[in-house]
Image (cartoon, rainbow, N blue to C red; front, top):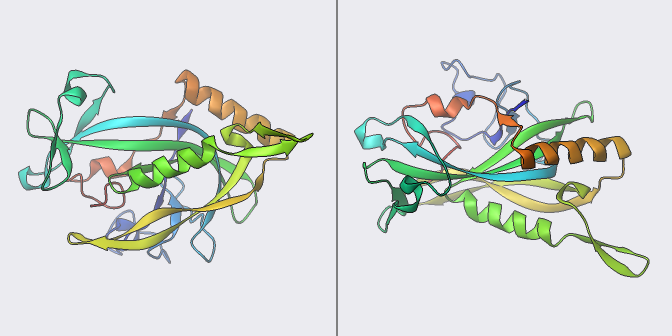
Length: 231
């Protein structure tokens, strides 16, 4: 099973450029879309309802932009390349011995609600660079989710709670982009069939039997393309 990505449309995204093949008619900066179906999934407030089911971390190698850019592959978490990468204090980026950039991608496997039908679809919300702080915050909040049952606090699995995610414009000296925001909990997963589907997805992520769909941003010329890797 290959899972598509769900991403925020940025001002530089091809989805808002009419001459690009990936242009989506009517798409606007801040909206959230499915990279495979091209469907806009966010509501009028640029928010989506999600159920987190699993989490993985990827280590991706890119040729720096000034050297032509391009995706070179993925490295295992404890590989020599990852363990020997060096952080450049000026750019705040990690570099491999060969001079290429090493990018950490936090990937949240989720169920995302279709705003038109109310049904749920599997998707990956990936966060990189400045988004890693948001990912860590969300993981901490997920680990702390509890519900009172017969006078006792019972810890819920990650897929037991529905969350609302949005995004907000942020900037630094290098530019402006839209960053994921964890707006809070919407409610609990009370439907038995939905709960079962979420549990199954969580099991597949844990077993490593689920794969990400082709990432269109990895075909770009540089690691700084689109939302994938903000500044």
